[in-house]
Length: 546
Ligand SMILES: Nc1ncnc2c1ncn2[C@@H]1O[C@H](COP(=O)(O)OP(=O)(O)O)[C@@H](O)[C@H]1O
Ligand SMILES: N[C@@H](CC(=O)OP(=O)(O)O)C(=O)O
Image (cartoon, rainbow, N blue to C red; front, side, top):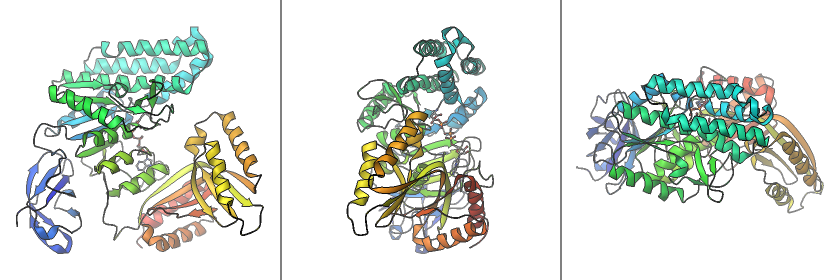
């Protein structure tokens, strides 16, 4: 029967689709017609009986992810029309040198049927170097700014890159001069506020995008550079950790689509940056924030796919810096990916899944150093029937509080009082386990550790002081949260194995929480035991059969 239902199939880039038949679980096989592009294929003419079958199928040679869509949907379709099709974000590691920039440009051009919006981070470790330069400027004295090592490094890197790409250094000259002047200003003022910090790091993305766009133009591929803070990325005024405001979506969509309709130049947008809605100053979205820029653009423009290109083969079963044998995870849901990112997997920005989930736009995590690897596809749902554990994530240097009520059992309002204290002090809580008269919880280190050392110590003292009015409080520092992202429906199976592994490694779990999350079980251990635990758990779950 001809198409009563349309499926979008997103084919693994770089792999040929050798079969024109799809197997739909037990519902049989059906033929499909393909509109191939180099990175995707659209499947039509699917039989009626497939309507309720699992959406993910495997196809010979290529892995294919299917996402059911109604025919009436207006989302842009790859290979037809002239609209922008996807967003491709490249992180600092993907654009760390002229050679890498050329490879990324080739990679983009190898998908001739895609019309992507490009989002870039700063080159390599530029953001870290800018922050270091700023810190040195505070104390070095105006006459010594010239000799800040990190400033020389950044200048040399960007000028050399311009030369090696064969583009005019004028595209970044003003920014290099502006950076120099800003560091002089910081050294005169002898202070580096959060607002100035954001302005300082913005130079990284402003320069990488200018170089990249100039290079695309030079090789005959029309491109146009955009500063996110000029095209409608409106944020809160929380400098260094700003959040995107709703107004961003229509504004960004209007600017990019209007310009695209007049002139088909590839948009190259600065990741990580926004503009505070009150201050009108440049803000940043928190470290790794370019992922969030990419998903925001994906949602704003209703694109077909969001690709985030990294230096690893997608989301892995654990941090490869902890265990080099970590394996790539082929499929994740938005909820799993969000939990994984929130609980410490550096690979994705903690808030980046939100726009993708709202817009129901698949996110593909790919390796720019190994484009043929299938990577990870993140969608609203996936077949969980065989899933047990998906990934193990570690969040270090967490502060834990054991709070026991000084009143007798049956007193109401205890939990409310505890959480009101945190609300009043503006401190967010990560993992919680409770009984009627006691509560154990961990404090979000990203929020707490973002503050100055003295302020942080004062705040912890203040928290304890407030809570001691109603409870006996034990402050436990240097703990780690090990988050087990997986199928919580199988929690008994997971926990049985976790406790066996931890016991055989002589590790005592200090707190455990499954909570309302359907995808995460967290255990708290001492910092110094944590990496060893992750390796042992990885070996038990991913390297031995159940
Ligand atoms: N679970 C994980 N899966 C993949 N990478 C991880 C994971 N945990 C930590 N990482 C680290 O995240 C890095 C990629 O994230 P990031 O440096 O932010 O990329 P980019 O700068 O390219 O956006 C990897 O190089 C890897 O070391
Ligand atoms: N350059 C910023 C933003 C970013 O997203 O970087 P990356 O994509 O390299 O993690 C940072 O270092 O935080």
